[in-house]
Image 1: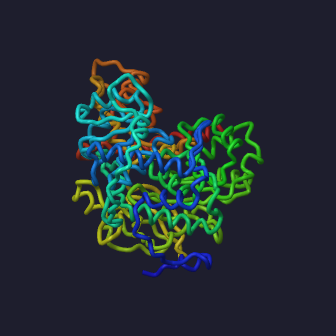
Image 2: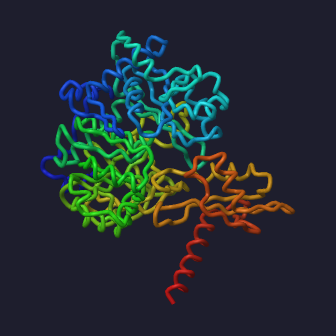
Image 3: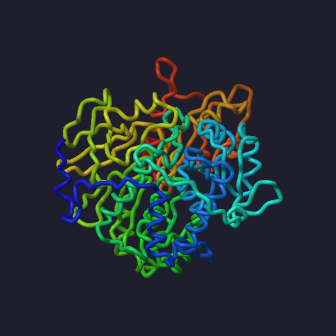
Length: 538
């Protein structure tokens, strides 16, 4: 396949690189050896050096090993961004285990499948999550460890670290085969699938990011602002990049604009990776000053499209080019990006990183490559592409064919290999950087005793990119309010999945065979919005 984007690589970026066959733990070990006294993590008033964090990692790994943890065991981490996340993440990697990434906002309904499917035994969480976990189908099988002290019998992380056990098994990792992370994602059915990311997949993405940063960052001493959650691929890669550069990682547990702006001013980050919502929040803050970003060297946007207006306004304010990126959980985040230097085309997310191929195929068969400039499904190939879906060979064979990942996204490529995202073949909603699957919300709505029919869809939102709207038909002789629907969903879904708008209808649009037409609801909404906007202007 011709790769026209090579012509736009700066001279010092190779077309292909050899990815080292190493474990994820290697990156921490190397940084701790090279720069033991450099600060790795800054959290509130606490900071840890590389040697201090590695010591905690090794002691926790030894404590787990002494309790029977072996290579291949699944270990769930259900935390917001914090230093304990890093301790557990690298301890599990040191033992050859598999980290199962779990969003702390998940409710029992969502956790039941993931806990059963992954068959994890070990879990690290805050004590306020214990009751929720114990009440799942698999709660009595979990070995829960907490990051805060509690009156329960569940062990406390720092008590295990302080045991100071030192006996560790040898580190024996097959980088290309051994799974490092199990990251659950959904599909058009809303049923979660465990994306298997190997040590090699993650190492590939780390090296690709470093190369395409093109000298903007140096080793050591950079400061990375951890806004993306660590349970998300984008957040995991920010953290891994910080360690690759032997830099400092500043975890943001919850993004709140006033607090985050204070932290930016206090710690002066040199690298920012943000979803569009955070760019918007910063730009709209009345006290946001040009000098607030004077330390910035590199800036990336991902997880959802960034509008041209926001991009230009932020670049003017910061003086730093935003590198837009494209990737999926299945591709371990970045596969396409706007390079830090060289040509950039407005509206494009950039060109493939080294070792990576992209092509556009027809939407009907997925077999025929589309002519340049025409829209089709985006296919990706490279060393960062997942091993497959956990215990799901059928879905794996549908997603990866002849080495190509079928993304379900639609796009077009120009004659120079620049990729433009058009839309999504799947019906997934991306709100504030989170992937939301409409059928999952519909399933919860249908459980309500007063709901006859329901259909959830994404609508444009100036802040979140998209937001969630549900159209509902109420059963005859029943009464239902928007507040009741929101309350019902809040009890059963993570907050970001709860519908922000609810519309009650007498009927929903359907096909000849009775299938509810989600796309018609979207089209009707957009048409009504156009009419309303026209009336307001006139």
